[in-house]
Length: 386
Ligand SMILES: *Cc1c(COP(=O)(O)O)cnc(C)c1O
Image (cartoon, rainbow, N blue to C red):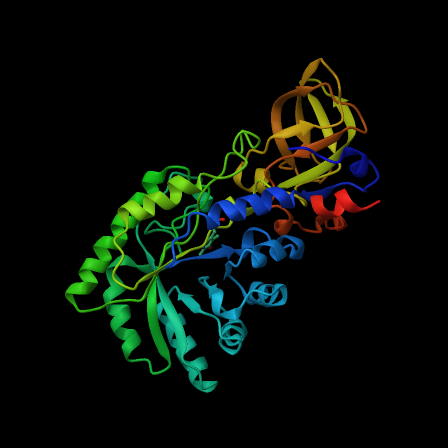
């Protein structure tokens, strides 16, 4: 990725930098794969920066929200309410009411008690709530334990075995209309076999439901497509072709059925970079530490999931290399971006680019240690500003 380094030099670090050209290219790459009865709802929780959302709205995508705050952010950003879906195991009453009043496309319902509360609130407000049942397909994904969501032991969704009963239950609720089925098996999934397995499980369920004469209008397969954190310049755009091809091949759609997707990470991860300045290089007894001004408060993924992000020194012209632990200033031992990392010899004042941080980066920032939240700039802003 090319960076406007001169512009960077005058900015206070750390900050997030978004390459909006790459974002637009990525959005076009997704659009090129969508068939007429396919719908993309961007998973907003990956990145809610209004500057980023604007591009996604312009691409014509809908949104997948997991809180009332996200629904509000999407409405503010200009997403049409009728393209918003709302998932989450614990929806509060005010969040459900916000969705009802805004007229969102669908509530992705994760339990029977939730279904009953939505019915009650819809009745109070004189609305019919469109719902899709989030079914736990009991599919394990090849990814980190903390971001696996589709196994029977995970907290998400309605048990596979109860799907039929819950659909029947919907019929007794006067203010609920069951319009579809929803699934989401996890995140950062690179094995297309996992998505193929999901598609086959959905086929199985649809066949079973058909024997009871049940036909649903919408199938939502969630998100979860992963990206290449090792080589962001080699693969700046996720493998959308294989991803969508997998569903085209394995998922049996019924006549008139609409297929919905909820990609988050794959859309925004690669366009984002966390830019940080080196404060000190410390030579300790056993290793060298590069201490930078970004910390786990700006990017928590390494501390939270052991996630790897490529780090580049974007101002050094050093030929020699050294091995460092790259760490932040926060008073936590887990405030480490990477250990034993070989890169050009680094000095105080150098700028480091922490790559592939457009998803689950800025949005997870906190003010722990009374830090200020990181600023953000887009390539568009920096290229045209004098
Ligand atoms: C997080 C989430 C997504 C998006 O996951 P990605 O891995 O970012 O694509 C989609 N759907 C639901 C219900 C989610 O919770």
